[in-house]
Length: 191
Ligand SMILES: Cc1cc2nc3c(=O)[nH]c(=O)nc-3n(C[C@H](O)[C@H](O)[C@H](O)COP(=O)(O)O)c2cc1C
Image (cartoon, rainbow, N blue to C red):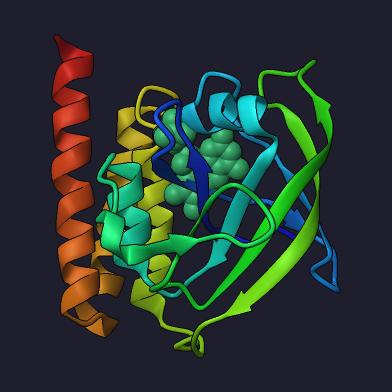
């Protein structure tokens, strides 16, 4: 099953880099399979360090911010214990990961990972349609240039309705941030 969340990796300067990612997990949460695009910063960081921290979160605004290229403040992290990396303290749970197998034969690499430590920070909020709509919007935003503009726009309007009906202020802010991001990306794609 795929679990959408946030991954932190360490860049060349030793600083945390956050990105949205959807690994496959087993039922016991002991093995993760990451599929990062080989062109992504996350992939390059993983190739160098072979270590990462995966976060389960209900913070849809953090997922939107990651897709828009905004890093959380350094104060939001604490150091990982079993890998060289950083844990996002605002997440619900975090899994320190070590890559055991690295396959780069496809455009999306296939990285088998074992869990070396689990952090449990707080309860998950629960199901909320606006939070899920923001995650869907974030996925669409990460696919501008891959998915046709018309397809993105028609799905976007449906997602906006869900955010307006069921979201709180964080989900409204997240959606607006993504809307500005995709408009900017469409504009660049046209030029
Ligand atoms: C919920 C969610 C899940 C995602 N899962 C993946 C994934 O599994 N693999 C991937 O390459 N990109 C995935 N993306 C897109 C990346 O987050 C996006 O391409 C990002 O720009 C790559 O980040 P980086 O270059 O900063 O590492 C996902 C995006 C979202 C919003």
